[in-house]
Amino acid sequence: MRRKMAAGNWKMNGTEASLAEVDALIAAHPAPACEVLLAPPATLIAAMAARARGTKLAVGGQDCHCAASGAHTGDIAAGMLADAGASHVILGHSERRADYGETDAQVCAKATAARVAGLVSLICVGETEAQRDAGETLAIIGGQLGGSVPEGADGSNTVVAYEPVWAIGTGRTPTLAQIAEVHDFLRAELSARFGAEGAAIRLLYGGSVKPVNAAEIFATLNVDGALVGGASLKAADFGAIITALEAG
Ligand code: PEP
Image 1: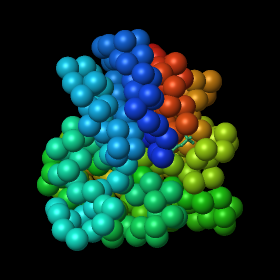
Image 2 (image 1 turned 60 degrees about the vertical axis):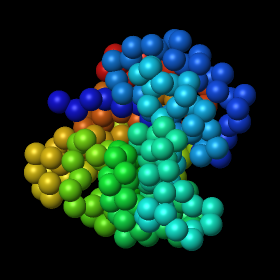
Image 3 (image 1 turned 45 degrees about the vertical axis):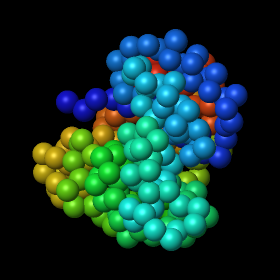
């Protein structure tokens, strides 16, 4: 049985004052029936983790380096995220793939480093609009999945997020049939490669999930939760998504 998950990605948003939203979220959802994760910018991980201590809220990073330490100015090792109080890390987000040219091999190396540090990786895959229009969606996603998910992945150390690039931050979402097609494909690929361990890896949908569309997305087969960007910044919106996931 895969435990449902609501994960929020704050991206490059938030300062100390934003932690009031975390307090509000914890107060409104002290005992959620699903796993709840927030990934703030690195500057807020320790402070958010301190507020989340003793609660059901998990805290994650938005990226990590593949090395354990060394001369990598501006980068953060997976062990440092864990030291700051993170239990998870988002890897291979399309914004990092686009902004920094991150490759599947780099994402894979980061996921291995995360596992060594005891972090759960949320590995993101997704096609661009041009790739979808060209009928390449499953080929692109299959390649990203195969190249980004390391050997040894299982339900305890890996979550996969399907995030169509064209749906992120745009207010556009795929049809439920399109989401189901990709999630069924991901489930089959992971099961074929990892067997029962692969069947236990949770599949999140991400891309313009909002309180208004969350319930129907969560009712889709093989959707185990959501990776949420903009709507995770406000406790009321993210809370409504959590409630929809609990009910689904
Ligand atoms: C994301 O960036 O992971 C994301 C899903 O963003 P949004 O919900 O804002 O589309």
